[in-house]
Amino acid sequence: MSTTKTYRRALTIAGSDPSGGAGLQADLKTFSALGVYGMSAVVAVVDENTVGVTGVHPVPVPFVEGQIRSCLDDIGADAVKIGMLHSSELIRAVHDTLREYKLDKIVLDPVMVATSGDPLLENDAVATLRDLLIPATAVITPNIPEAEILLGKKIADQSELPDAARELSQGNRVSVLLKAGHLEGDTLTDIFYNARTGRLTPLTSPKVDTANTHGTGCTLSSAFAAFLAHGASLDLAAEKAKAYISQAIAAGAHYKIGHGHGPVHHFHAWW
Image (cartoon, rainbow, N blue to C red; front, side, top):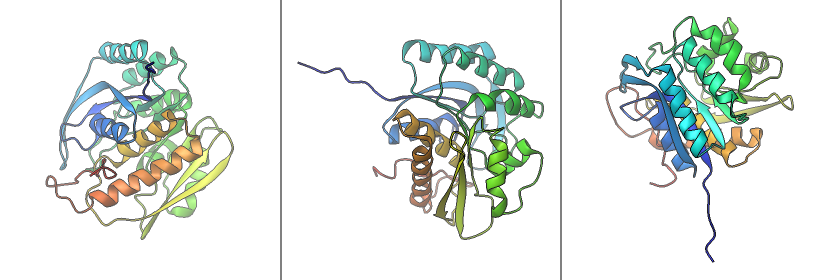
C-alpha cells in the first residue's frame, strides 16, 4: 500500500536576478539545498550582475497579487520569504494579500541597497515597509545599513547591536536577526532577538576574506524561512540559518564568477 508523501513548501516574493546569485534565484537555490519545495512570485525583473544594478522593471502590482494567490490557493506554504519590494503600492498589496491567508511564518529581508551599493527601494516606501509590513511578519533580517535606515540613527559598533535589535522589534512585535557583516573585525557576531521570549542570542562566525558576497542577505533570510517551514523554533531556525550562510560563504570564497561580487555556494553540502 503506497503512502502519499508531501513536501515542506516555501514561497519567495522577490525580484529576479538574471546572474543567479541573489533575488529569487538565490532563494530557490537555498530552498532546494535545504529540502524545501520552492515557489516564487516575481515582483520585478532586475537588470544586474556581479558588478551592479543597471535597471529595475517592476511587475504590475495586480499581477504580483495573482502570483501569490495562485501559489497559496493551490499549493499553500509552510513559510514565506519576502525580499525586495520597491514601492509603497507593492508593499501594501503584498501585506493585504498575505493577510488573507493568515500565515504566521513570514521572514522579511528589508532589502534597500544592493551589495554593489545600488539603491533598490524607493524613498517613500521605507515608512510603509516599517509601519505596515514589518509588524505583520515573524522575523526581519536587516544588515546594519538597513537597520540604520529603519531606526533613523547610526550603529557604530558591536556593543550597540543588542539594543538596536530590541528597538527594531517594535515593542516585541517582530523578531530580529541583525547582521554584523558591515562591522570591522576578524569575526562576525550577528544578534538574534526573539520577540516572543525576549531572548538575545549572539551568532558568531569567522569573517571570510572574499568578494563573493552577492546575495548573502537573500540566502540567509531564505534559509531562515526554510528551517521554519521544517518546523524549527525561531531560535533554532536562526542558528541553523546562520550556520548555513557561513558555510556557503566559506565554500564559495575561492570561486571566480563574474568581475565583481560573486555568489555564495548554495549547494556546498552536495558538491
